[in-house]
Image (cartoon, rainbow, N blue to C red):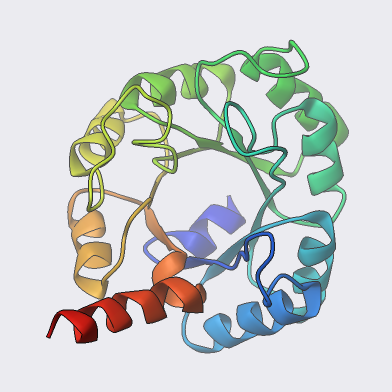
Length: 225
């Protein structure tokens, strides 16, 4: 697939701001997206329908789109209706919760993916997984891309300080399709390590596009010294 070829072996940057932050504005996120593409990002991951529409106008690289509904349980593009709304913004890939947990609308992951494909046959699906077992089930359900996004956030695996390399390797070992390593990748060295461990592409967000977190790292380091 052309989109996967564009993303293969590259860096995807997550451009997302959190509620209450000054950067939570579609125009700002579109500017951030355009800036990281200038720096070499081969794709963008972003949330929110307004942000996705603004970013679509600002960049030509593939976009992984999602919405977040709530903040716990299944909240990443949790329902079929959410998936359809995200796809309607013109993104190439819809990211959704790819765990084995019950979905809010009662549909299975397979039913959700099938429903999305019926309406948008050209849109790819990225399953945000919390474990290799999630990834295997997501592949069975028809996901095109397996992500390690939720490793450490579902209670199935402990949350590691650094990337969950065991999870990355476990999903890669399945051999069930492209694997996007995502989650607590904070340095260029860790991004490169993800590729060495077999990832198809690497998604980095906080370390590039979240000034509050980056500043806190430096401020804490200065305070300790």
